[in-house]
Image 1 (spheres, one colour):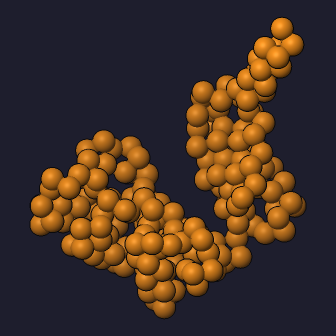
Image 2 (cartoon, helix red, strand yellow):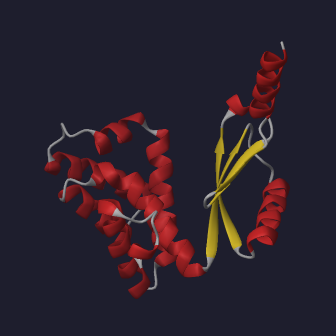
Image 3 (cartoon, rainbow, N blue to C red):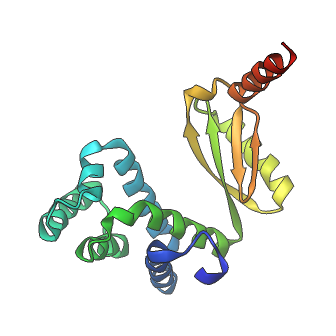
Length: 186
């Protein structure tokens, strides 16, 4: 399965495939995805946790002890916790973000979903998110899961990446196009 999807390859792809197959056998695919999403959110919010995950300075046992405390406090248990501990014991925790991304791709393929990366200037309302999902579903014919990232530097509009396609309707890009056109004219 991993060989068919170019986004799921390398070390992270092998770990994600193993986790996916285990979760599928245990019928806990959605629970594992929710736990990994929770861990990724914690990782994005905490510089200390990022340092713990990425730094090779920590010994494996110290990293495992700290990770266990974080997982216990977050309520992440079962297959997800065991998997993150295996990554740590194998000194591969630095690749956890890629593993999570690859796992999501495997789940989406398994469920017949597509995943779109959406960048917006400010958080979208539920109504706008639903409208965007509906528009993308009409284009792809599949349910579309959205990974929304807020980036105020795009000023307005949005950037949507779906598979190999990208639509950039951000105000920043439009202003840059006008700027370049004015340079060429003048």
